[in-house]
Amino acid sequence: MGPLRWCWRELTRPRGVQAHPRHARWRAALVRSRRRSRDSQSGVALLIVVSAIMIITVLVSEMNYGARVRLLLAAHQKEEVQAYWLARTGINIYKLILAGNMALKNSSLSDYSGMIGVNLGDALWQAVPFISTGLMRMVFVSGGDVEDLDEEDLREVSTTGAVSDEIAEQSREELSTGHFANRHFLDFDGDFNASIVDEDSKVNLNGFASRGTADVLQEELTATTLYGIMSGQDQDQWFYDRDIDRWEIIGNVADWVDKDNTRCGLRSGYEDDLYNRIEPDPYLAKNAPFDSKEEIKLVDGWEGEVYDKLEERVTVWGEGKVNINTASREVMFGLLKAYCQGTPADSVVEHCQDTMAEQVLFSDWKSADEFTEYLTNTCGCTADDNMKNVITTSSTVFTVTSMGVVGDTTVTITAVLDYSSGGGTMKYWRVD
Image (cartoon, rainbow, N blue to C red; front, side, top):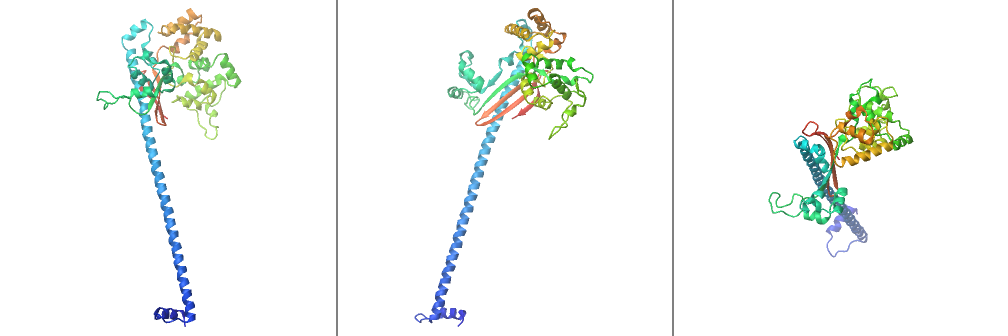
């Protein structure tokens, strides 16, 4: 009997009728086969369920991670926007101060203030060399009485921009006016810290833009001034130790800015030879004025230590004259070394600077003539005729650096403002 017939007979066999022994073995085998089939199906189903759970778990975890990342990005972008506008606030405050400064400079009060030795052209911005929300909070908490401010707190806010939690909380107290929805205008998250520097207190490297091909480098005023701030015993030793020829790197600056392609100074040849062999990215001399101070580091010999050493003494903005009322001691030292006849010794220059420091405590220099006469009559240092052509007594170009901080996010804005033509003109803008 074949298996198919046996299956049919088993299915149609009446109850109580005993199966043939051989058929019983087939029946047992059929039962075992069915059990194995059911066990196999159960295993496949379990595998499918476990796989589905794993896939769902991965999807849910991925969705959760993506949602958290998007939430953190949104929070960071919010803080970045807040920090940016806080930094803009510092820029705008200084624009207001500088506008007021120029208004005072051009007013009739300037003539009267000059009689008592006060230069209103620089007085206002110099009175606020830095400003921050920390300083503003201290002023408002004290009721505007600056004399009552604690000296230690002032030192802290000038170095870190931060104030104590007590002062910060007091500055956020509600007001009775409705202009700010019953909130103090300092009641916000984050802080800003801004500072101002006048670019006219430095040596302008763009002064080489007007030089001609036949001009002698050592006779140019910009080159002479630049060499002056590199002079002195300490400077001589510093450049000697590094085997740096000062006139050569000054000539490289002049070649970068001037319009011709021929190297000036003692070495001849093409300007581009200094740069077109640089690996892996060669470039050419610009033959145009600098657009930013960072560009100075592209000039051969000015990268690294030289730029770091002279960064605070040089600029690429301004009218090209140094404001003797705001110049640093290092820049003034260079001017005296460069334009006092006979190239005075370091000790003579330092004595002259000490004498001038006592003078400026009582009065600013009113003109270049007054300054040169003082050098001759009081310091015993006769000024060269060219000194009057490289100095001024007021500033018109300023760099404002403002940093906004919200949480862990920091945004820094650097702006260069030019007030030489009256209204402020933006010459440079950078956001970091």
